[in-house]
Amino acid sequence: MDIAAVLSFLAAEDYTIAREVLQRGVATLFFIAFLSAWNQFPALLGERGLTPAPRFIALTTSDQAPSLFRWKHFTYTDRRLRIVCGVGMLAAVTVVIGLPQAGPAWTTIPVFGLMWWLYFSISSIGQRFYGFGWESLLLESGFLVGFLGSHEVAPSLLMIVFLRWFVVRVEFGAGMIKMRGDSSWRDLSAMDYHHQTQPMPGPFSRRAHLMPGWVHRSETLGSHVVQLIAPWLLFLPQPIASFAAVAIIITQLALVVTGNYAWLNWATILLAFAGISDSFLAWIVGGPWPGWGWPVSSGAEAADASASTAAVGSSDFPLWWAILIAVFVVWQCVLNAPALRNLFSPGQLMNASFNRWGLGNAYGAFGSMTESRDEIIIEGTLDPEATMTEGDWRPYVFKGKPGDVHRRSPSVAPYHLRLDWLMWFAALGDYRQSWFSRLIERIGSGDAQIRTQLGPDPFDGQAPALIRVRIFAYRYATGTERRQAREEGQPRPWWVRSNPRTMVEPTDLRDG
Image (cartoon, rainbow, N blue to C red; front, side):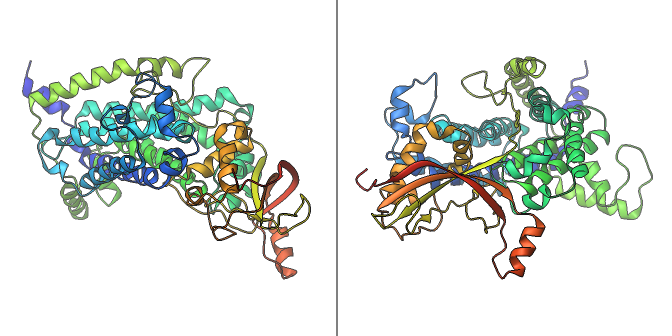
């Protein structure tokens, strides 16, 4: 066996740009995730949070929820939580600016391992507020991309192929959960509802919802084609793999534009870059058709030179590094066996972990499509004599979720507004959970900490005399309704709400 030939084969020298995008991009998402925890964890899950992490830690074991905060010398406090977040953000910044990548081959592994462990320690005790598929997606991505190595070595072909398999788990898994879960995906009507009923609409969601029916059918069909077929094309030769990756990236960008899914779409975009070669990117900027042997023009030569400069990497691929990566990939394949079986199981699980460390997970979203939208509106008044139907009731505004019918939905992703997301689930029935009753109590008592998670306070920090909670049916205002409001000199509505129902009668919670 010619060891040199094997090592040359394992060195994926045409994927140095993909490595840069993956490592720096995932580090950026880690920075945002740690920042989100810094700003939100203490109010939602801290010592005085809605579902306090110290209590959760006391009621669970390290097998159920491994975490740095179980160490007897580092038990949870809000201050220590922010220390962890600060260290995590600092580590992320070092990768974004390229410090670990400038060291020996192995230096990216401990830096990404540190970010993974610190964020895993937060996520594992995050309970309902961290029960989202993109948490495990970020963690697993971060655990893997460190093994792409520094600039001292070329990216490993085994890691590039394994990351493509990761895309299959994410995209094909999501496609199959849709096909198995809801008839609206099978009859192509799902997108008739999605833009209006999704958890956190964005500024362009209304326009997308009001598109003609044939556009929605095309969206649904296109989603099936990209999620069920394109991921498998990543394993074909170039440039087919790159075109498949571009198709995935385009559909994910469409979701970025029309919704707010934290870093779910951005993480998927980054993973899809594992299918894009440097040669393909050079062709995009004017080079030859990748891999087809076309003559290179002078313009193409310049593009190749430019791409070569951007694609920092070395052809050196030492044997010890090849063995390390091979052992790591074999271990990961073993951990991925349950996820592989799950993909083809009639009882497919969505966003499931099969081991305590959250590696080799199952992913997916929207296995069932919500066809109507309800919104919970929390209101207060300073008038202790107010009734359910009379009085100066003012709504508490959330930072992202719909409320004021005249407010255009904001764009907040990849930042994650956790409380706003759970309010969508509360409207579907999750209000029976303890976090929701405690939220009402904290708002009603004028709690300053929980107010940091909301928009402008209608009472400037003063506790309301009474609080009430109602739920409304929401739909997007049509173009006709907006034009009519303008002609009448009224503010143009973004939403139309109807069918108010009482969830909590006027209650004095100031002593709560």
